[in-house]
Length: 112
Length: 114
Image (cartoon, rainbow over all chains, first blue to last red; front, top):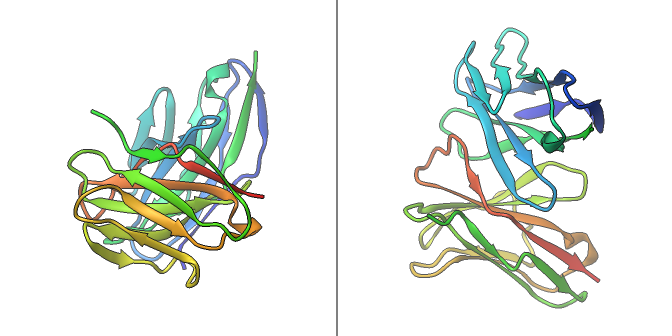
């Protein structure tokens, strides 16, 4: 079945460092891919999405490119801030489906 | 424009009691999804409902769990005779269409069974 694998955390960075969180997926068909962010004590918020191969999703300085050839959707940010500390979830939704499949999440700590 | 509203935010129940979790979708959204997040894990699909209909409940345990989305009022996730393993965060999401290209999630209900 469909699945999402993302790098284990926690990831600890200093402010203004470059961030990469790896995400790979297994799916039949042509899924849409998402990154969600969960701040402490809150629900998930959609951060960005891409619906077809080679699409780049971007928001708040974060970006991820849908790579069909490597089945990946890595999250990147050029310069992280303390306020980016959260748990990041990679997810997929297959064509015509309604069940979003989530990865286990990667916790990010950013130190001042 | 209120988002997805879940209550209560925190719920403590003793083993054997019932837990009722409520979710009011965003205005204009008629599709509701419930997910469960166990500690240090991602979210797992439980059930998908439209008004007065359960569309898919394949992720919901067969016993003790039930969900409804009545014509009027919020969606309810009900857990009877709770056990310690039910302790988790339960998230509700809604969407305006059947194919949710990006959910809007509520803030969740954190259930603790003591």
